[in-house]
Image (cartoon, rainbow, N blue to C red; front, side, top):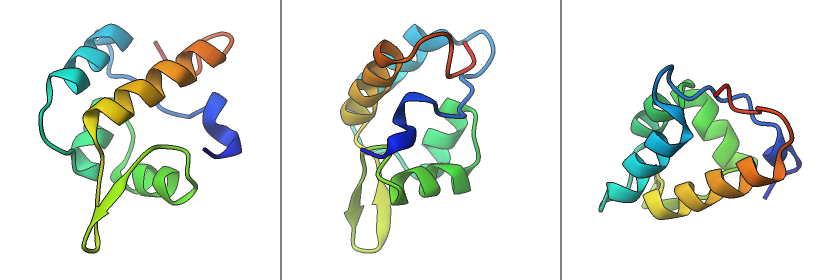
Length: 91
């Protein structure tokens, strides 16, 4: 994981809160595309790709496509929130 993992510039959509985001992630049974994850986390698709390239968020490839396992992302988000002081993700 990259060094920026404890202070990520993501903003969970207003009114959704971290628990709702985690529920959404954990209820998914298929891989997420960057655009879906970006919408959920309130960032651009390009930001998601940059985070993946930097090793800040777990991902895998299917051919040349970048995908995100919802369970892995939920675990990552929980770890980031538990290590952070204050409110790093705009909740």
